[in-house]
Length: 281
Ligand code: SF4
Ligand code: SF4
Image 1 (cartoon, rainbow, N blue to C red):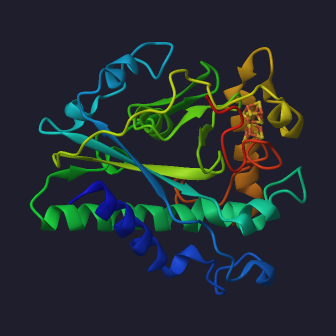
Image 2 (image 1 turned 90 degrees about the horizontal axis):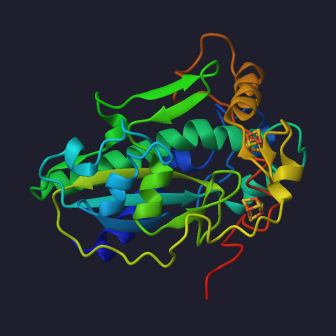
């Protein structure tokens, strides 16, 4: 399979998903029933042996617990990163009340993420049916994510945003989102495979090339979690986002991974919402 075929296939699989529109029977309000959640994904490709994956083991990056593609799969040749931009409807809905996430936004985080997981799974099945080995690290039994407010630890052994950076999809912003050519508002997923493909060139050199430090995300943040001087405070962000779980989920419903919650005020009403803010010449 070629990179172009994979890109077309990912978009087609997404369009086939009923749940890319909020199903009326589960909509939190009839006003958001049928709202489109994501636009077609953009894909980035990196060689599994890219030295930057080893750089992610440094404490100032993800940390020594980060597993490289070949630590996930010995035969790995390529990492495919996919970015699903949030639809204009969802982004617009999240610009109205800057205190709480919109219903469209939390549906995109829950049912939308289910949909992205299924697209990932169907892509893997397609590759497997052609004889390739495939793995999605976050769906692997070896994946772990740590969240410890006391020790201020928010990390995992596979970081979709860092992997997307290596795959050429974008650079970090002050808010710690990854700013892609389609903006910062969206979700990532990835696949490790032994399919050999030519890696994409990274059109940047610095971690923050697409962020102008304009400060719009600082002003938008309802938790006061972002600062121009010190960047993002994960504890303050996490506390706020966790508070939204109680607001949008009946007790005991849905799993932690696909609960309805979120915020995303640092991803809307900002210059990097739909594209790089400070592209390198
Ligand atoms: S809003 Fe401005 S400061 Fe914040 S991430 Fe985007 S470009 Fe950077
Ligand atoms: S997600 Fe919300 S609380 Fe967290 S940094 Fe962004 S704006 Fe602030």
